[in-house]
Length: 374
Image (cartoon, rainbow, N blue to C red; front, side):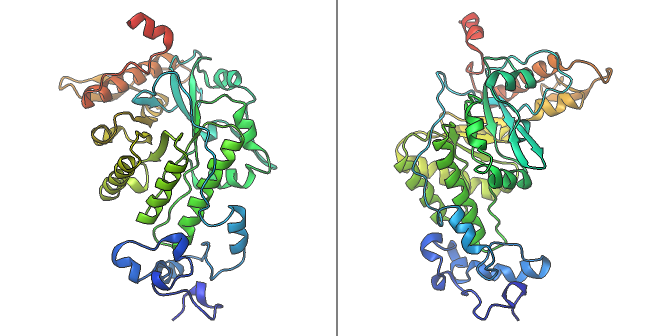
């Protein structure tokens, strides 16, 4: 019996990848799933959910969506890569806001979430800051701090960003902030819906690489791939745009699964070997996977919010008798300045990460600190 998506469609989609009109752009599913096709997923999904997917069986807005991204998976033609005089450190803290801090955080490089620079009103989204100095002043960062803008964010925020980024010239505003770099939003690959949804997400990632480059924003492409064909698309882009050195991905959602993460890292390593050059991954939520990253990549950076979130919730990191770090709740007034506690938690968290993975790195130090060490 046809599911909800097919009720008004006299010709339901094909039953295998070989028969699919999207095969040339999609490449098909891997392994035995190729003979089934991705539209078989609709049978379960549409019985459990109102059909809100991008699907040829719900043609309203289908063609317009592809027009908006310049066609199915059209590769980007430009990418402005981040430039830094020194390599990125192995660990970078994620700083969400300046709450309860009165003194600047003296870090050479920090990451901040997209929500930290966005202001939302009735007219949509707008960038809350006009200059790098204003951004650093508001977030209590040193003026010399290099800021990486992370666009790994809740779906609603990055959907709103896609809706407004051209209408409100958001990328042109971001370019004035003199960022170290900006990761491309991580539009989701949904494994339980037709592949056209993932292709649309991938197409948006490609278009934003282009548009960020046009606006002069240093860009870190976010790698999303679920099939061999997807990896082939990324490899071709990396060959066409050899200036791409940094790529981003995250271990917080889909790649939290061990099997998927292992497969993803294997494919990324194979792509790097095929390219014959180094790739520097920036991994969000990857502090527990340092050993895996170290085995594959000479240079990498992990970003997490642990020290920041623990400090906000009044925890200090201390070393126990068994040499394992422990977070301990501290007592203090609600208005207590958290500047020193945050700096200390970042320091000890970084030291533990480096010691556990046997990493020796001073690239997190600012230039004046590096001179003292030397």
